Length: 397
Ligand SMILES: Cc1cc2nc3c(=O)[nH]c(=O)nc-3n(C[C@H](O)[C@H](O)[C@H](O)COP(=O)(O)O)c2cc1C
Image (cartoon, rainbow, N blue to C red; front, side, top):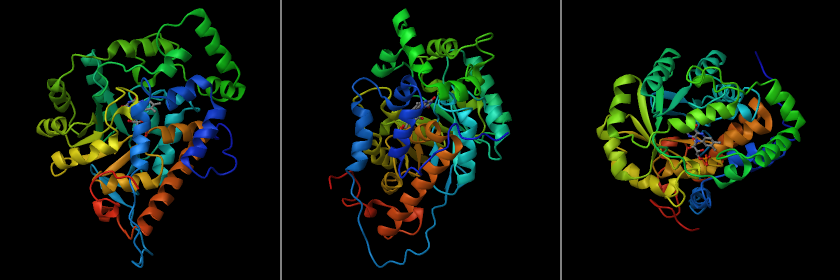
């Protein structure tokens, strides 16, 4: 089945920012804020972008950049460019069957889609809609046997890589979500405000809420039998985050997953070393897009330390604040094997479904090409600290 975009994309958005603005107009405020917001005062979330913006690129000239090779092999996967769609929970509420639409756009662009545990579309639905199996992201849940079942399901679906998210033993508060009733207690007033917000987006109600049926979390239906609303699933998920999780649990995952294993949410070089000692194939330098502990390091600032610590042993990926191909070039120059984008695809799918995500990936690719050409770089592996104004560390222009 093919989906029409929830609404035609309209005048071609020039940038990820344009897609964000379009998403703001198209989906209910509570959903836009859920995507857009971060933890507490959102200092780390802003730092993710600001620290990237502060890195300067070094312009080089007369280097024959007529042929550019953006391809890369990331954890065994041949990609058309080293960009992946990060796991984003609840995406099927932003557009009709959004995980399927995004996975299709990723496949067409030759990149990887990573399916979140808390997706609306199940891993099997996504797998059935694309030729390339997605990666699967897992939270360590209190119910370990259910998590084992999910790993088995992902393996049967052919997912080559499991992304284990470890920066979520407790939930960092997002004030926007609390205010909007997306998390925390909901009195009658909050419930009424939420209903008015949803109802004032009739196009979203028709095309996403009614046609898209985002009522259940596809991967968790067996865990919450009989549940018929997203809030029932959210309550179950909130009770499943396990603060007692330790490195022993990583060994348990390793025993249950024979494919490639990546640890997501590492900022500290010591943790990265320990992860490598426990046999992971890669780490993702990430602060969950500034959605967990406000005040921790921007991802791009943490990246060089992690690369120094384990870059010769495991693959180091990063996410957080990537809004353009220029940002991708900077992260790769500082040692990332690839970047994941979270909000960029969430805004894009809300703005225009599959076409929106395709447009976002085209934009990022074009920007990366320009960054490479004007820094005199013709292949991804040539991006290095030398590509940056002050090699080796973030610098003020
Ligand atoms: C709306 C939203 C939902 C997310 N849900 C998940 C999730 O289910 N699992 C996960 O590991 N990370 C999740 N993340 C974090 C992303 O995978 C990624 O780390 C982050 O978005 C990167 O930062 P960026 O949004 O600035 O690109 C989510 C992020 C957003 C914005």
